[in-house]
Amino acid sequence: MKDLISLHDITTEELHNLLKLGLKLKDEQKKGIQHHLLKGKTLGMIFTKSSTRTRVSFEVGMTQLGGYPLFLSSNDIQLGRGETIHDTAKVLERYLDGIMIRTYAHSDVIELAEEADIPVINALTDLLHPCQVLADLMTTYEHKGKLEGLKFAYIGDGNNMAHSIMYGCAKAGLDCAIATPEGYKCDEEVVENAKSDFKASGRELILTTDPVEAIKNADVVYTDTWVSMGQEAEKAERQRIFMPYQVNKEIFKHAADDAVFMHCLPAYRGYEVTEDVIDGPQSVIFDEAENRLHAQKAVMATLMG
Ligand code: CP
Ligand code: NVA
Image 1 (cartoon, rainbow, N blue to C red):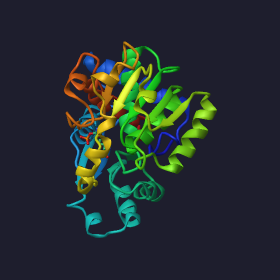
Image 2: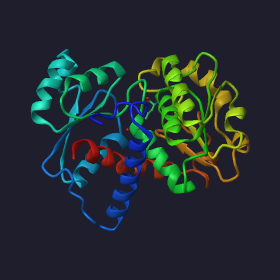
Image 3: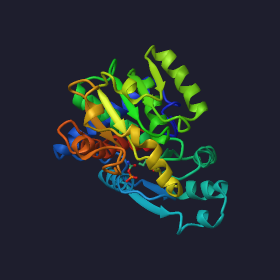
Image 4: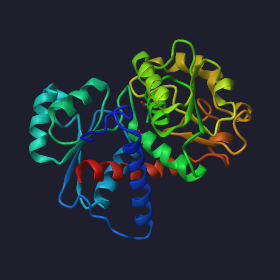
């Protein structure tokens, strides 16, 4: 494993090792045990989109591992003024021990990883958000005591979260149901890849336009914003089209009695989820947010250690 670009690229064993290490680092951190696995190392963090959780959890995680996080806003580096990804990769690999990047085009991250000799971590593209799903699987494990055989339901936009959830569930052995409106389905290539991963794991993938079908008996219920970064111009139209896909108390009744509610955040209450669900007793959103830190420390320690 040189990079973490997509959960489709890693094996079930690699995924389990990351989750195990994340849980161990979390436990040690809580006990005050220091683990300076990246002492003297520097992570460059390129952002061309906003972030709260990703930026803070990577910076804090790198610090807890004894290394140094270097925030690189695309507004400030020459990449934002048209320097090529190739030249950026070739320069940064001379200084850094790893690169984390959040950007629009997924192909840019693939190119960066191909060109740079150092590890590259995908911290969200328009296509995928693998670090979030590592944290979500870790959170699922903590709340359910297992992953294998659970049902994970995602309701909403067929976006980066839906894609990474499919990949993550297939690799971790969960059944997965995705409900999206007509016209907002998941990327076809990702669906094809996911189908082959589900075939290999022997678990079920349901793709539907019916949110009730997706949520039925689910152990985990997940949603995300209807308006991802870069889609702001479509906001009003999306809010109208997605309303029947809102996760509210009514639809939540179809999930398993002990289902947990998850959201990658930031959330928009009254749109993709109602307050009574996201702020209710079955919501584990802040555990997910915390686990970004621990899961990503496992990724950095594995790739850069
Ligand atoms: N969930 C997530 O990636 O949050 P940020 O956009 O705040 O980083
Ligand atoms: N789908 C959202 C996720 C934010 C963490 C976006 O891409 O904006």
